[in-house]
Length: 116
Image (cartoon, rainbow, N blue to C red; front, side, top):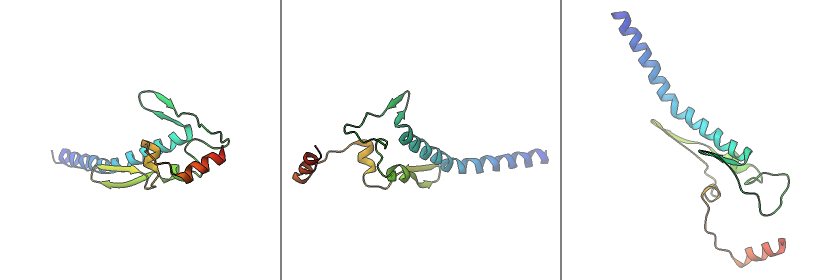
């Protein structure tokens, strides 16, 4: 009986350690998933959705990528108990992901007209 109790306690400790590691491991998987979306230029949910093509041709680089800074910025931001937060602290990450309303200024108009 004593051996069974020791074995039970040992297994319980193993489960406890695994549960404590789980948020960080899931966070790492989420970061990898996000970086893969940039590489494969798609989104995967119940099906794979390829990102829309770029309106202006720019050969040699993927969508949402110029320097690769945004793709590399995704990381585990914090782990609190059994929760993990994954994201980017770059100010333009949220507009790239969720979209944004941007007021077009005269200077912006001139820039885009010059690029034609």
